[in-house]
Image 1 (cartoon, rainbow, N blue to C red):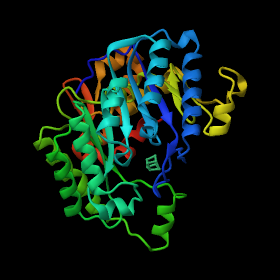
Image 2 (image 1 turned 135 degrees about the vertical axis):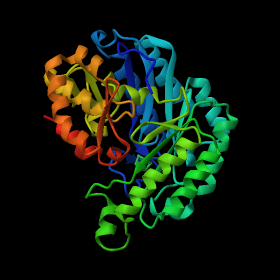
Image 3 (image 1 turned 120 degrees about the vertical axis):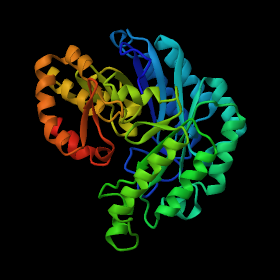
Image 4 (image 1 turned 60 degrees about the horizontal axis):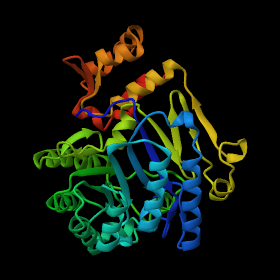
Length: 386
Ligand code: SF4
């Protein structure tokens, strides 16, 4: 699936680092918060950061704005609207810009959803994660299965016509029957997009400790593999086409913001711990709320750190790695034009052993992962890392 959006545009990401409670599997930068004053102060900080963005960063038009977290739906519609207005005042927006907001099912009702829509949000990503109480409890989510269903119905009733469901598989205690039942239930609600993520745990999160202590057990590897491939087939049969390893959409509903990452496009991140990339430079705001809130924009004291200053070769390698996550793969002619013939040849040469093993394929000028290659993508893609 190809993006119809040009590379000469920009995506904006706004990080809301607050959640009602911390989920035991989560490693994102987010803090438990229910203090309206803190949420308001953070909103004001975000607006200041957006409006003080240097003019040199504002040259390209914006075609996507993404509120991620954390739990963006802890902010009121008025606060979300204020941030969208600040972004629209600071940048030139494409008239059909995609404005996505991640929503936790426990935090909204039809009224607030309508108000978010009025504020400018035109795509909703519902963090369902599961549709069975047993799994939601293991995940430590603040919502029940009934809340999830209520949220789906409210989102539809509010009139959103671009809806994503986030789902997690490979949850401790989950069987393939549980997972397929959850997926089928989700499909029955006819979302435009589904992102399904394998539960992946960093060693320091509480769920990893519970597993190490024998209190929880992850499904076997073969079962997880079956969960993935059966879901891929099921989603395909229902018209949700796979366009990335973990992402599926009806025609015309691929997430424009995330496509930007996979197509090695540029983006600016705002908020604590938000990451930006322009050209070869990737940097991150302070992953510390106090430092972020106290910062002086565009000064050394802002707490920003440079994550990478990539050479042209490193950028080309990353573009290949990201592009191969898409099921369409990488168009070799376009890649040669963008990064040069010699590098394209070198990478094709490196790809040969995976082509021989049936994990990569070339087809009509494209290089792509094969279906068996999707779940082994980490091992395959690291051959392009250096
Ligand atoms: S709601 Fe999302 S961001 Fe917040 S703790 Fe849970 S998984 Fe992490």
